[in-house]
Length: 128
Image (cartoon, rainbow, N blue to C red; front, side, top):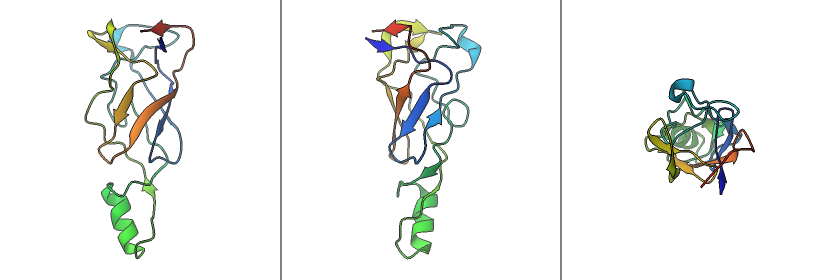
């Protein structure tokens, strides 16, 4: 069983230089220790905060800075671009009519990064 993810969870992107934080707004009215997340809590700069510097060459800012540096990889500030929801979630537990987010779920950034949960923000509530 996985842990239910809630507000304040620590996240990490495979191309990010620093950990990020998950912000869950209390719109679903479901609390664990703080507001509980569902798979649709994937909005960049609202739910998913930046991960420091981005190292992905698929990111146009990194690609242009690297080209200007004559091919030397030049990280640029992270601006997450997450169009798809978290997957797979916990389909048997619904929060706001959507599957609950557990700590094994992943979210894909359009620049190629895989965002995963490092710490779910609470350790007492488990979901399948």
